[in-house]
Image (cartoon, rainbow, N blue to C red; front, side, top):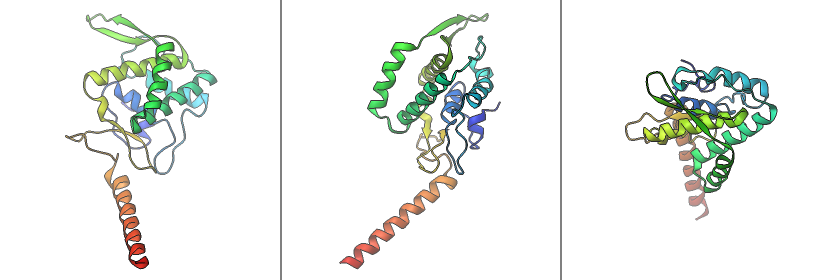
Length: 201
């Protein structure tokens, strides 16, 4: 199973429906070199949604929603705010989202033939997509996987990855590609600062 946005950055997808959230976050222009923002235009946004909506682990009975230009703008703003919350846990971003979610989003429950109950997004356009995101966020929080979804600390990268380390301590999506260069830049900056301090004494 492939996830079009996440696959661009050669990152392993998160488990279950959390991969859908990860893929939404990775639609932005990130990585080295920068990839195209898949939510920049309605055509690419719709193509992305059509490819991700029907993945088996989402188990959706409804077809993909159609996005308007306005839907794409709202979805892009939601993605950016969610990514900011994930990266910084900023209180302002959380409060803004709470107001949006309380006023516009809802879901329905469906009883499957095997007796299991599935939550499905209700509404249309970007509201349906964000409803699905919330459902998968809730599922990930119940399984204690949500805290493992992270944004790479490298400002030159900033892709979203799933931390599979035993103690959930990873901060780089790839230590070799992002961690080592960042640590080297920090070391050189300390060396320059130390040299400057010695020459001014």
